[in-house]
Length: 378
Image (cartoon, rainbow, N blue to C red; front, side, top):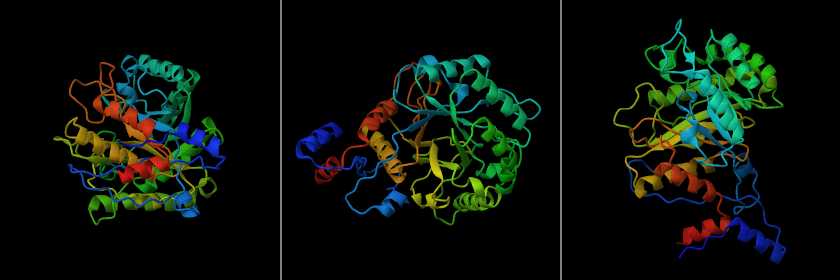
């Protein structure tokens, strides 16, 4: 029999005994088991961990959670009241299903954007808006964002572009989704010279976050890892040169996927790793806050064993973050009929097996240190 000490029980104990117990708590430790993915090797870089005076002091991570949901597939009816308590939705306005016009992607229909605004306001969800950053879209994106804000969209952060670290951007492979033009670290920083001053006028640093694109990577000699690591190093170097006065105000984001690769992986899209080394978080300055704007675990089937592997990954990523960082997951829903190993809600508006597991994890990830020790002993 497992003894689980909840925060409520701990608080009662404190009142009775007059103990001064730290409010921070550490998420439960998940075990490893056989599965398609390798055991994760974690190297955290938490400033709080470095400054800790006690080995038993627990580490509190922000309880704010991002759920990624592209606006083009949003469905207010399907989303319903599922996953209550989520603080952020991360989204963007372009519709990749629409044909391009003059080589540029078009925005979603106004009715869809309006339903998203109504839904997020009703559920008190704040919006992290991923900007459509290219050398040609500053004016149109500014006008579009201003129109959304006028309609009362509660944008609290801007993310400056998408997965520009992927080789398809450097190779200008326009057949791949999202690619409009060549993007390298130097080109990206040149665009930021225009975009950052413009959008900090819309959302001052004192009122919201401005998120620079970073990349997760391993420490192998593979071309992919080396390319992604070099992206980070170059971007940080150029940021320090061009925006030294903003370094302590800017944030950065990364995406991280693990698990079994789909039967038909999307060539040129985000990679799925078999083993995670969190030391890539050292690439960016420590004062920069991290937003995990996408993450997920690909499972082979909706079995307990596979769902436990997914939960272990959620926990390990969550625990690798610092108190100021924000955890995020992909994706809220998928409107296709076929099962989706990442979707939390299905097209009928019901929680998927992944969604049910994630909802339970949200309430259990902050088990007390005593509960964690009890689980170890079991």
